[in-house]
Image (cartoon, rainbow, N blue to C red):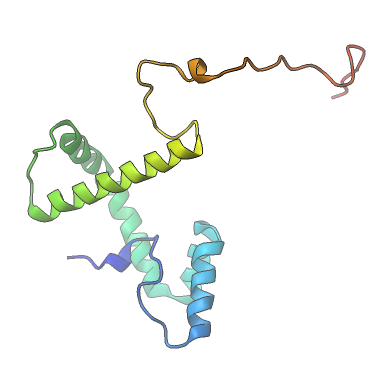
Length: 143
């Protein structure tokens, strides 16, 4: 069975030897984008970088099967594969629910929410004003 630290989004789960190392690691993991962090990791911690690369390769290899299995669980919630798979899917689904609910609260239009018989336009109280140029009709555009 794979170690949970093999996933690329690993956060502070293993306590480093000193507080400054901990702060440095957290800063790197959370404040730079994944590509830059992976480049840094390739030189600073080749073993961890290797695990991340292997995870990405397995994800690419099995992505169709993962999507098919997820679709099967979604279409029939009583699907039973293994206890670990069943429990993990329930946890995954609950995490997705929380994510979608937070996006709905934020008013994010790309929150994967389905309209309940209404279009988003019906929820708008006022029609948006048409866009007009602040420079008037005589403004010339140079390209």
